[in-house]
Length: 322
Image 1 (cartoon, rainbow, N blue to C red):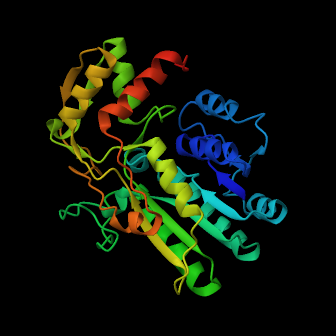
Image 2 (cartoon, rainbow, N blue to C red):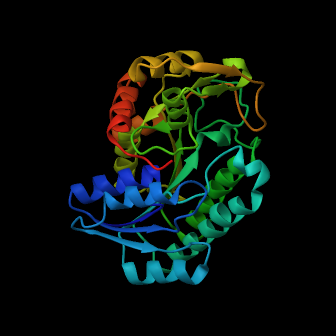
């Protein structure tokens, strides 16, 4: 296939692009290299892709409609994997404009470009945050998601609705993937695996919200990639051709058990700072992945400690920017 991968300098985007080119697909990678976190880290990720046969990189901002249109017009892609976004629940509280531009305007531009230059399938990143404070666990794709707790979550819910409209009106085959806490090598520095690991190595305290009384469905990155690429090859054929899937590990882990696992793989003790719940956060996440498994024959299952061991080995071997 010829695949457009947006956000290819991001965590999941880099891993998906690597897997695609390794199996012989052509990848046009796009990223705006936003300074939300270290651009140097993003360039390091890109360096793992550049020079590989079948990979080409374009720096572009999809919030610029003409840039987005020209990409689809010239690329003649078979599929679009849209992983570019402004991430982060907490950051959205104080920086709403970034989410409007990156998650709403850019996605609207992409949908309209896909309408005029239709791929066989558009797969895009949604988020487990769309479930809000839903107390029914595990979370299923059939659950109501009308009450997001952050602007970030609201933009991801909006993406699903926007894609549904284009699927209904224009027949654009689209699938949204609700990712649950993806972690692993090359992870984002604002997420807990990297935040906690670097603090522990440097002897700084880690911050545990809700006084540590949290549970998360941690999904190892290789599993998230496998699920994503299997979905990419299976466009929906319903009317409209639209669907969403959870991508999670189905094994929620208590936050304190997660910290203990990090301590074991790093060989470092954590200094704990217990704090109240933060605005926009939820006490627990847990993915029901039966729909994903029924459609693709696969569901994530890597045990947390096995994934953290691989993450720790990568961290020890990589000279990361400060």
